Image 1 (cartoon, rainbow over the protein chains, first blue to last red):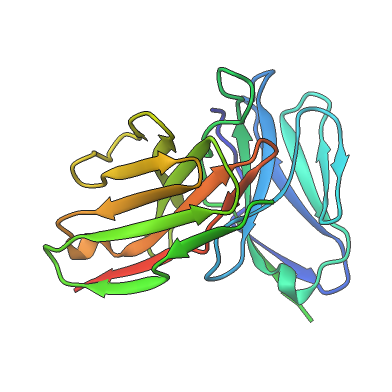
Image 2 (tube, helix red, strand yellow):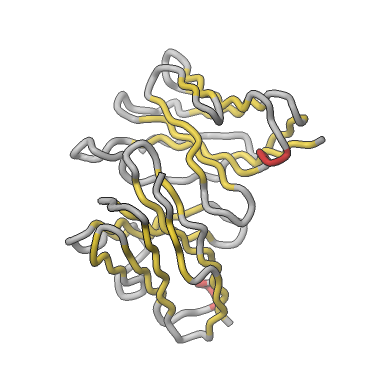
Length: 115
Length: 112
């Protein structure tokens, strides 16, 4: 699986948009970009994923560059409860194409949302 | 999404003993995963557990130390054997739901 690079930490003011970057310059054509977060003392939580089109759900938006070498996770209105470690992971479907195989976690970005 | 019950939530164990961690899912899933998270570190995959087959272990993890059972599509166990203080970590299970993974809340293990 391709390696990802994220800044170790970021700050964001409550109510403002949090934009978390991720570099995945060696991504392959069939690898998806996944984002998870881990709030302190909890298991990781799925946020969003995409292949090449931008995606949006109730939690966040995912913007993937046209060359797919980088992406940005956007939390449109950050709250204090969004303080967590955010992981960007690239992942290839398994041989049967019915699931997305194992996750390889990097160190992630510690996002701190302050009042 | 699936609901995962992981037990125990925490335990303190004596070195040389073994602990079995249970992961119960409220729906049938094909792929389950076991992770370790050492203090202050990210998650590391231990093994993939598919029902009806032997678990597939990642580099650095062996079956004798971390035996896994997967008797059906809703349940799995991970045993941490012959524990030492270096095994003190959070152990988590997860299931692949096709669109993403859902994680249990973890087992915080302290070995003394």
